[in-house]
Image 1 (cartoon, one colour):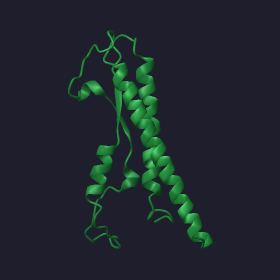
Image 2: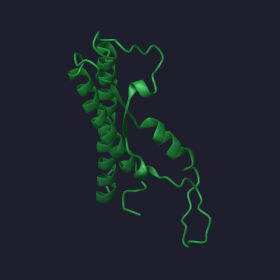
Image 3: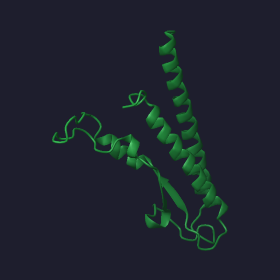
Length: 142
């Protein structure tokens, strides 16, 4: 167990990684808007995070291989954002020819980029505030 595992730092770090990947995927979708046959992509992260946190209400240390595990077998450290094609699991209102060439919808992509940017900035601010709080605790100041 690391020094900062009991803080929000691992979760915020994973979130920042996922949001950076999501921004790259959205940029790739926009760059390929006129590429015939291109399939738009999405990043899944929040679903995996919810699944991992569902069993984390009670956590226990398994000190012997014969002990039963308590809590979720998959912690936050195993969560990895995944890129998948939108066509594999289409959302409501999905249009295969949204751009006239492929399934990339510029309005949806721009809206997703803005939402993702807000999430990234919020997570970065929360990470900074968490680190400042740790620094204050080390220094003993209020």
